[in-house]
Structures are given as C-alpha cells and as structure tokens.
Length: 139
Image (tube, rainbow, N blue to C red; front, top):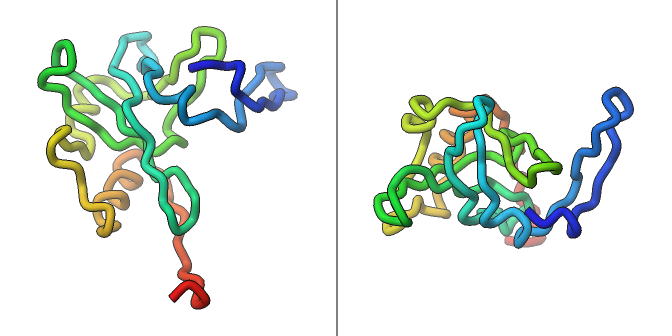
C-alpha cells in the first residue's frame, strides 16, 4: 500500500490517522494480516459496481504456494482495518473461518450479473450492503 496516494483524516479520539481514500493501485498487492498478526493473503483485485461506483468487494488471495492452488475470497472493504504504519490491511478473521467464507477459484469467478453472491459475502462478514435503486432515466 503506497500511503503517498492516500487522503487521510485524523481520529480525534485516538490521534491515529485513518485513510479515507486510497488509489486502487495502492490497495492491489497489499498484504493482509489477521488480528493475530498472521498473514492471510493479499489483495488481488477490486470489484466495482458500475451502477453506483461503489467498490463491491476486494478479492483476497489465500492459500496455495507461489500462486498455485490459491483460493480467492470476496471481502467487503468495510471488513478491513488499515495499518498505515506497516502498510497492511487487517482482517479480523482466523484462517479456519476464512476457509468457510464465500470464495471462488481464479478460473471460475462469480457472475457479475447476479447479486446473490455479493449478498452472501456481505451477510458472511456481517455488513449491510448498500441498496441499489435504479435510475429510471438510465433504462
């Protein structure tokens, strides 16, 4: 994560600086740790909803060796904390639970036309997905 490309705000309670905006290129390739400081993978991609401009989820690569046998997991960005000092993302999940998360392999991505998968991702991580309301002018 290249913190030079971040827009930040200061948390007045703790004094910590929390990023508000990050470039996609600074997120992709960022290592992800769990709360036990164990590496659980890296961000491989971001999935953007073209209707709203929202990032639907980050694609986390976990498992495998040298890119072989990795499983990909969809994780809402709201599930991550950002450690700007170590330039890491933190996900409060242990490896056993992560293995049960909604995932897919690199040759079989979920359909982007079906909201069922994304809804299951948000449900798994305990987040409410922002509801999309179609603009009648766009029909």
